[in-house]
Every structure is written in structure tokens, then in C-alpha cells.
Length: 250
Image (cartoon, rainbow, N blue to C red):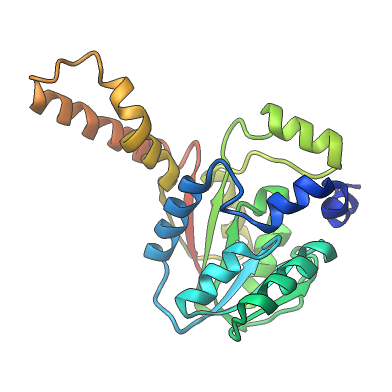
């Protein structure tokens, strides 16, 4: 069963894999994109002090950033070794507004306790995303919000995902915004809004734009700017169908 794989994930990683998991985002090649994406999430959240439920938090690196921002945070994960690592790091960092709990986020028991729920790169590991969103809805106070940042179309068929499923017996799914929104509405969320993934915009602005626009002579500055703007708008238009950040309101 995939949940057994999730529960045993940390112990299967090996020493190098555990070091990588514990030291994220700094240990990851995508570290710059993680920071850009987390900054976008902070920009979409109401300001602290509020209670945040960080769902599928792993070793708790996102939880620690939320706590440093001033939120009261509970990070939950199904893998006991992940939560043990998260608690060990937090003992060193001494964040009093941060706690961790081992639990299956598809069967959580929290009711109307949180202002914000976050799935950061976690909902696509669920066996039943509708059950996970239902538990998030249940955990939120009236008018609370849930924010998701998940990989979109093509994720499950990627070489990385295929390796993870074969090696660790975990769930990997495509989780585009449309799929999230449909499931969220079925469990009771009233409103939704979709935004581009910040790392897509980051790659476009800082990494890919120069290559894409190289065919336009630099002396045609206004045309280059117009082409860059059209690229940005295209990313924004496609985000709901491909991948993006989703903000749901109870």
C-alpha cells in the first residue's frame, strides 16, 4: 500500500537522502525556486498572528519559515521519522510557536482550529485528495483559507516520479489546479483563485527569458519587452490548466 511507503519513506532514503530531507531547502538544487515560491505564498496569505496547519510538512522546513514569519504553526506528516527530524531541528532553533504531530492528513481529527491550511508539495502524495481536502476544510475556522502549491500535468509520468514510486512505494500524481478546485468544491470550499507558480515566473524572468528572446535584436527594446509581457501573460493564462498556486476559501 502507498501509505506504508509514505510511513517508511525516511528510513529508506539512506544517509545522503536523509541529510537532503533534513536540510531542505538549502540542500536542494531547486533552492532558489523554493524561496521564490514560498515568498509568493507569504504574499497571498493574510498576515500573522494566525494559526497555520502545514499539511504533509515532511521534515518541517516550510513550517519553520511560517513560524519565523510569526504564525502559530502545527506541522503534520504521516512519517514518524520525518516528524522526529522536524522536532530535533526545532529543538535547536527554539521556535516556541511551532509544534509537530504524526498523523494521516486524510483522517485528521482537527475541527475549526486553524485560520490557514497549507499543502506545499504534499497533496499530490495523497491516496485520496478529496479526503485530504475535506480534512483541511474541517480543520479551518469559518472563512479560513487553504493554499496549495502542487506539481501539475506530467508530474506522475516524469522519470523522477516513476523512480520514487518504484523505489519507495509512494503516491505521485498530477495535481493541476482544476483537479484541486473540483475536489475542493465537492467538500465545501466556496471560492477559489489560481495564480502562476512563482518558480515558473522566476525561470521565465531570470533564466529562460534571455534564451527565448534571443531571436529579437536588442535594439528592438520595446518589442522585446512586449514579447516578455506576452510570455508572462501566457503563463498566467495557462496556470489553471497546467500548474499553479490555488487559494481556496471556506
